[in-house]
Length: 101
Image (cartoon, rainbow, N blue to C red; front, side):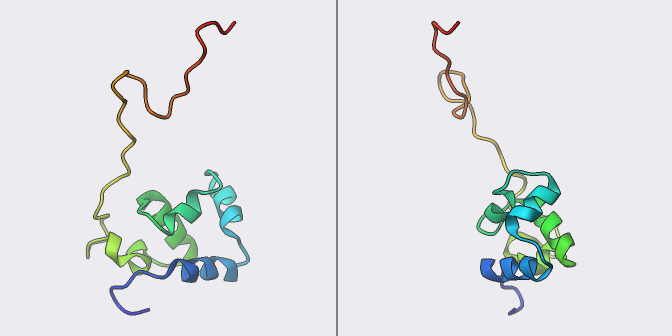
């Protein structure tokens, strides 16, 4: 890899496969949702980046230098959950029918 350039997502996937694992199997091993590892390949997710990097024997800033400062601190901070909408309910919350028994 060129210094200062993130690994290509296919390179990260290949490195994981070379250990005999798949993205899905690694998610299961970490005890997270089955897409957690794969979503880290395209968007910042510091907690999962640390786990993947540790699994591969690297520091997160080695794999994703655009996401970390020189000291290894995430540049974008932790993921933030969406804020509730104007109704006061979280946008991901499901509504139940008023007449549900």
